[in-house]
Image 1 (cartoon, one colour):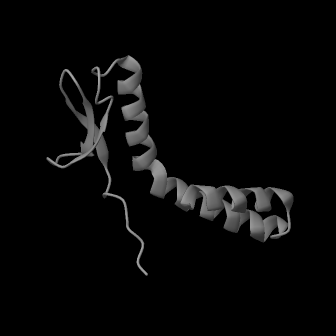
Image 2 (image 1 turned 60 degrees about the vertical axis):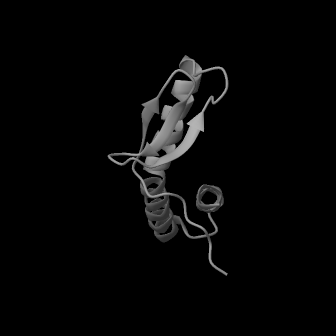
Length: 96
């Protein structure tokens, strides 16, 4: 069974009209999602769209950094350390 992957990053909030703020692939015409499709976007909707793009664009780097931190701490403190276990648990959430 194969897992469906998300649309490749980087994402950008590069579409807006009176009714929508759109999230799409940076430097592409592909629209991924619309934010506030009814009633038009307000400042909160625009901020939420920007936050979604930021989170998506930083995700892979964040996963890699947490994996490196786990490896470094595991070597220093051992895998049974409470802090190492907390990082492992957080990594599972990030990758879910």
